[in-house]
Length: 115
Length: 112
Image (cartoon, rainbow over all chains, first blue to last red; front, top):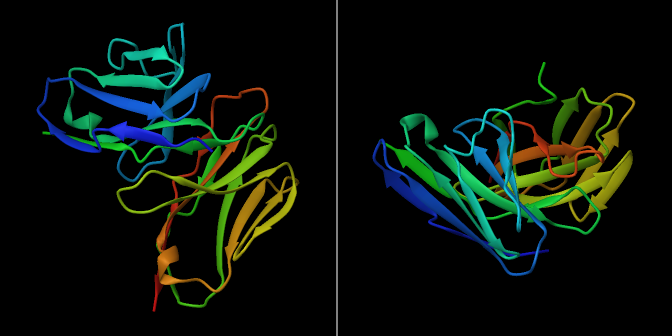
């Protein structure tokens, strides 16, 4: 399956600032997915990023807070805007692991701590 | 009620033990069932997946799905200290190709 690289792997941020997370995949994929894993919680889908169109956001997540770019079939960015301590989480990029199956593979994640 | 329920543990077992990890779910439309392993400070790693009901075996790992009971299990035989991690179950429905529903994860510790 695809190999996913995420940057940064971790960061400590100040309240009110924004941070952009990058996701690079070693093969072309139609859809890329951004998940959040809050401390002690399960993974929650933030949005689906398709190349050439606006991202589709899940309930509770909005574009102003989590703008996403998808400039080509191997790359996407997620920005966490105007951060607060509640945004301290692991942010994970994922893509399909197997053709025709609803099975995902994940990057190593970006661990953000907001002070 | 959450769509997917998973006992958070922690589960502590001696090396060599058989480990049973379980999830229950409420949505009968789920058809894909996955188990991920997540080491501390790492992303989830896909261990196994099953489509619909039945068993699947891969080395020391066996995944079982019982759709009539809405219950899935992951068995680890001859557990090793390197199996110490958090195990997450995840499920998806064919009509919703972009959304996996995850359990909260069970933390497993295998001690020598």
